[in-house]
Image (cartoon, rainbow, N blue to C red):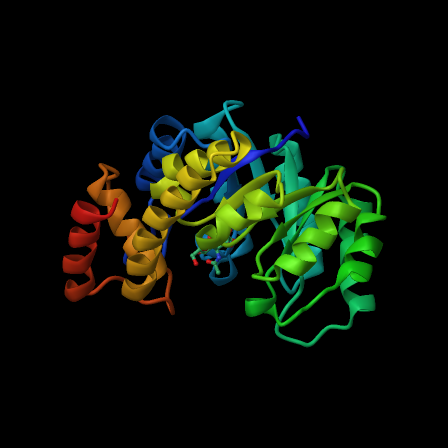
Length: 293
Ligand code: HMN
């Protein structure tokens, strides 16, 4: 099904003291997204999943668990990209066999790759993996900036169907939407969902939808209904929440909020070197849960 639209949570992954996946807790988070947040899909293996800190085997294990728990109930996108194109291909083939609806790949990072190198990386992945691919563009973390012309070249490759657009460049977003009406465009910054929705993105992929999926859907629906006052109000409430979460530490706070929502099995730690939650952050997460969620 390539009609992957709507609210898509970037899946959080709880780890134990040894850095292993807490499978029971992960299954609860997936269920919470499906049953309570009513998400349209999950983005597995993203930044939010602390994906760039874990081994290939563990990435596969997480793909397995997400598929096993969600069956065919929602769309599943496997983020397979990174700095190792051979791993990206291996993971892409793996997720495709599991039945993932699409794969996604972040632009390669750390080295300052040229656009020619970035393009070849995508070409290599789509040549080797028999699935649709969504480009993951997040210049603030990767340092790779692409303009209209670069996106046009990438969208011309076979099987590239969309982009997760994680940038505050609404000029570029408007040009992309206008130029490529058939490409799937996903908003990547949850705090800017409302303006992205006005430009008619097809959906949104983000971390905070794990706990704020209902309001986010409300924003998309209000914009569709042309009720801008309502959409603006929902974005305001969302941003009160997101602002407090960001100030308290993004992933640890989101994990704590999920625990307070009843995902209570096993430890919900981060993967080192990402720090796990402190007592002070725990207190603040409790306040956020009571006052802003
Ligand atoms: C992913 O790859 O896991 C995410 O979808 C990335 C996503 O765009 C998030 N970006 C980052 O965490 C850097 C946002 O959801 C972000 O967490 C949110 O807008 C709060 O700033």
